[in-house]
Amino acid sequence: MVKTFLSKNKLILLYGLSSAILLFVLKWLELKFVIMQNAFEIYAGCIALLFMGLGIWLALKLSKPKKETIIIEKEVFIKDTSDFVLNEKEIEKLGISKREMDVLQLMADGLSNQEIAERLFVSLNTIKTHSSNVLEKLDVKRRTQAVEKAKRLAIIH
Image (tube, rainbow, N blue to C red; front, top):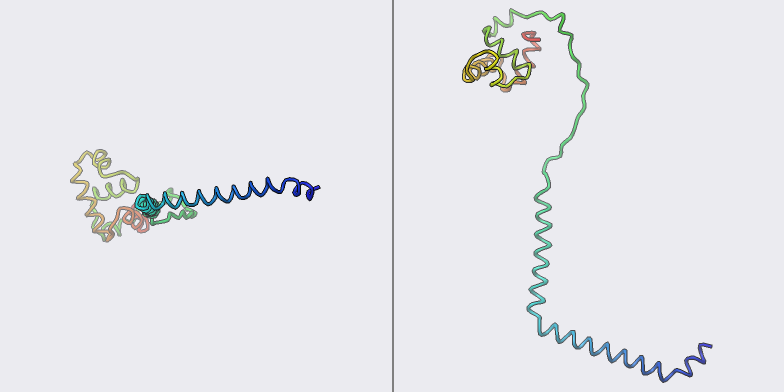
């Protein structure tokens, strides 16, 4: 059946195949002509696409955060403060005044300098002075370190 179809339509298939080859050659020549006529535009477009891709890649690379946040969960033990005994010897040894003790206790409660000043009815500069004195006397650099050391020494609860 296929053999009879090929023998009957041999001439038509031959003309069709030669037309397809001729059309392919003409399109290829036309494409070559278009490329030669517009070579600069094509090269400029390729370079522009290359730099656009490079810019997008670089922007994505630079916008990523450098540090990775790691969450660590720990058990927290809260001491029972009902049996708290104030270590007055340590307070005398460090030379902490009553007002500095008040400031230290309010720091431990998590209040800011402004909130401590409002609560104790003094100026913000006075609280800053008391805070720096407490940090110096406890030989620490940060409020959190001061609170932790004061709790360890049983100065505050």
